[in-house]
Amino acid sequence: MCGIAGILSQRQIQESDVHAIKRMNEIQKHRGPDDEGLYAGSRCVLGHKRLAIIDLSSNGHQPFISDDQRYYLVYNGEIYNYIELREELKALGWSFRTKTDTEVLLKSYQAWGADCLKKFNGMFAFVVYDSVNHSLFLARDRVGIKPLYYQLTEDRIYFASELKAFRAIDGFHPTLYPQAVFDFLVFNRTNIDDETFLTEIKRLPNGFYGLFDKDGLRLIQWWDPEKILQEKQEGSLEEIFKAVEELLISSLRLRMRSDVPVGSCLSGGVDSSILLGILFEHGMVKEGFPTFTASFPGFKKDETSYVDILNKKYPFVNYRTFPSSDKAYEELDTFTYFQDKPCTNPSFYAQYDVMRKAKEAGVTVLLDGQGGDEIFAGYHYFHGFHLCGLLKNKKYSDFISYFIRMALRKPDPEAYSTLLFKLMPASLQSALLMKRTPFIKNAFFREHLDKSIIFKKFMTAEDLNMSLVRHYQYKLEHLLHYEDRNSMAFSLEARVPYMDHRLIEYLLKVPGHFKIDIGETKRLQKMAVGKYTVQEILNRKDKTGFDTPIDEWFKDKKWQDLARDSYEDLLKDFSFVFEKKDMASFNSVLRWKLIQLAVWKRLFLN
Image (cartoon, rainbow, N blue to C red; front, side, top):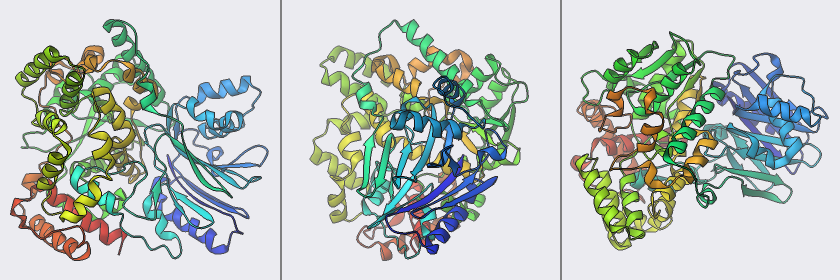
């Protein structure tokens, strides 16, 4: 896990370019405190900050140079199947001087070119400089676990792991990208396609690679989940259950490869508790394995009682942190700085606090249950997509039966509102969204609604499986971004076993009604691997996110004052976006978002 930065120019590199990459390195030092490296050639400068996880020796130093001195690699992430790939490459005649996955990655690129990406099981963002052709190869993993940003100018490209690093470039004057603000305020989403909150900076989309040379930048999609839907998974339910279990076990075995201490985030939910159960039941961890939980005593959605029940089954050690209103307020600037963008919900601050606790406990690698809701259809709004699919295919009796079963389980209102929203004509959808965001000027709303990928592609997904595809393409990275930033803020590596591409691709081929059945989300997950957790967690019907007592926080005058001042600030500086309204109708989440946008503006634009 590391921070990377660099520049490739069609003109001679200047001393100022070298200094810029050095400064970018320094800004990203939290991503890699163990080592740093710099390469400065005639056309290219590469910078690297290393967090040592595999082979802690100096053999892992980057930029990593090929044996023939032609290729220079800077890399952020982990190739979990590097041991198997090394053996495959050895059989082809390649030799190795280190035990790092970095060398395996570079030699895989030399052996197979861009096709090497399809062989990698991991999370990665890397750049290879060809010093003969003066070209760059830039690539990201399938679902966007690891970040990679770039800026194109007339004859050069800059790249970095984090948005804030670009502030080191001489003459860089960032401006707000309005579409990102629209999607943040209206759809509660960020990290969509290649957009960032800065007009000048783009993100290499997940599942893409790029080639930059004298002809400019060309982007190529190398992983497309939509194509996977065309294949259908054959077999009985029992065979599907077995395959899912084996794939998840295999994913965890790969993600336990580490030369530094490993722990796990743990909530009282299905995803993280199942992961922990597999670790213990298959002998991957021993008694005393460290886990980390955010606790909110007295909050009705506090999940620590379920952690206690799970602890009676498995002998893990649970470290708890207690994110508070006062602590969040005091750390607001620091937290927002590390995020690189405005944050949609204070639950991500709770995650930040959990990562800090893991750092204090001496853990460097953390497993996390992120992605379980996406591969197994865990959110309540998936009911709406599934019901729409039944209607589309004229399965009216199935629709009625499922709707009744769903209603008996008393789901979140999102289940009904998603269905109703999708059945509305576009004009009514627009009117409803506008009514929910009265603080946005009509002209701004109308200009950006039809440009929104979330509105055009995610909300129009025709059934459950297509909505899952849209998550991988446009929605999941929003969450993975926070996973990366919160862990890297404390120089930790977060690993997400549910995001193993083999598991993702297998489940996309499984019909939707196997995943969300008898009115219950995550039915397939519970049937296939539910035995690894406890019945009390499996029986929960109160599907909840990583919630914080935000309404309680905003009863505090200091938060109320900050929300008011933030709104006034935004009205002044972003007058083309915001309409002056009475804040009495603004709920706590909206007030948090206004605060976040105002703080981010001050830190990144001023």
